[in-house]
Image 1 (cartoon, rainbow, N blue to C red):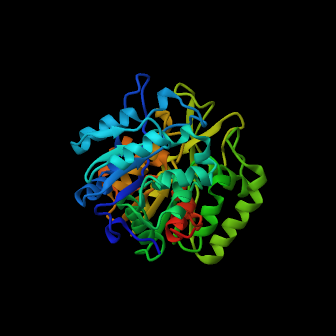
Image 2: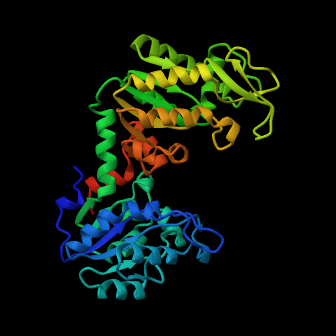
Length: 397
């Protein structure tokens, strides 16, 4: 069973806090969005209030095991210092004698930010020696990085095996709490909205949640494969023909279980994924051979909005179309407004959906926005997250 940070003793301890500070930087290495830093503040402040000596660790970007100056966490140290009104020392690396000396000299209520974990290829390889070196810096391990908890990396699954006391931070606690509210004992009707490009990337999620939900909306390009399975032609639209039979089986399973399975009945089509492309609205069975589906149509949107208004719990992962291109954004934006206006418990997962909710101005009107796309999807698939399992088995070596 996972213990949370407020259930373990972090006072007067050296705490290794794994966070997700993988923030976007501009060409001058300035942070353009500090949401991920702010998400970890409750765990950071709690640790400091308890008198912990805090060693914070994260990755940034994909340096592929090399020191890439543009991917240094130094700008994060400066931003975190301002956010907590406390000087955050920046380590020159994440392991080694100098880092060990800095960690050992930390007093209660002080913070040390380690340099980018992925400067070492051993991080993603989950190298035991690297994990042991990280673990030697502290005597308590706290994971507050949901976005990487589906990764079997050294700082996520290796370090907990070399530390006797482990826990999950407040961000992880929120992720677990809200997901369980939605999928384990939800208020019904329970609606799942799945979109995005490919059925293959969401197949496990669809198969796992289908018996659990009352209604399932399929949108985005992944809906095209289901339309093929219906026997419809979809022109130049992105499809996965090898999954047509699987799509048929899923729809039959939904029919047998009484799940309300909603697919687009009309579509916005265009000649190309271009803002100046010629577009038109057609019925789903009338897609021209030389055009592609880029968004859901108005009739579909109304049906999807009706499903939202009649739900008590909503889980949404994936946009309804190519919303990043303005002419193709209406379906996703309008659905975002409908979810925001709904009194239902609403949980949003995935970077694209998160972006859509923010663009629609509905971020403050949904119940919870997950911080991890891949990790959220793995939970939807019913799989154990390696980071969660590591916390449960803490100190086993």
